Image (cartoon, rainbow, N blue to C red; front, side, top):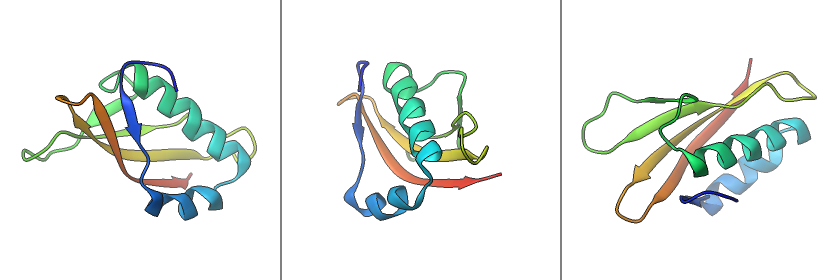
Length: 91
């Protein structure tokens, strides 16, 4: 992935990722590329929690299903790392 931020994709999400359609997986990939460049950009919103910076972002509609994928992630500024927490596909 490009950009100045590292993406931490935990192994526990691999099975869920595999269940997405091919278009949804591509939509997640494209979203993560954008987040690696700018994790606080217009495609994300901050979640109302004070202990950590959690953000939520939506992918573009998948080419095959038309569904968007929502990704919840945490920003670690000191290490310039984005920690994926979960994602959910649906209308």
